[in-house]
Length: 171
Image 1: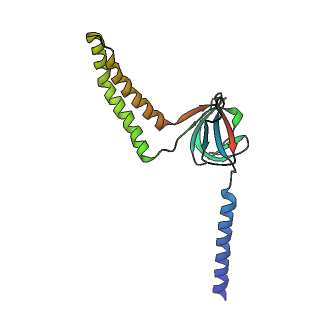
Image 2: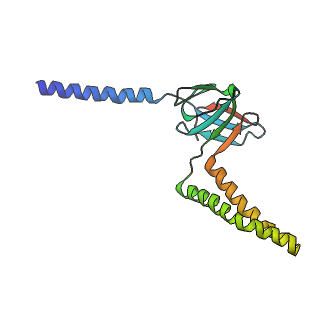
Image 3: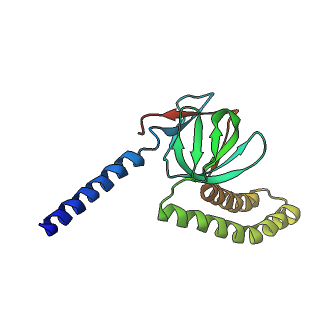
């Protein structure tokens, strides 16, 4: 009899635990949608667990994860509330795969390393030989390092060109 009561109580407590998990897990009904003002077809939808860095108009930067997104505000994991109208820019950390991450790191290091040799070589050919085509090599290596860095660092969206809004659907 006592064993049966303890088992029923245990099952009841587990059921309440799972039910409360479902109730409290839905903090936000929205996802963040960023669309370009000039071209409404360019839309970026952001997951709730994404990292972001934001700079409001007062200049105080905040780096955190999205905890919830409301009608006109963002709540971060540091319990800061940021209103869409107060944001000067927001920088999103893109989720990239392991292969893309390795390619970006390789681009940064290889581009930086190779540019040390190609810049003096191109200057030599321009000064001595009088030809311009060797400039392609340092431009390519520097471009590889810049593109790799941009992939790793994420994208900054200025609110002058991009519009932040909540989205109830996530595609």
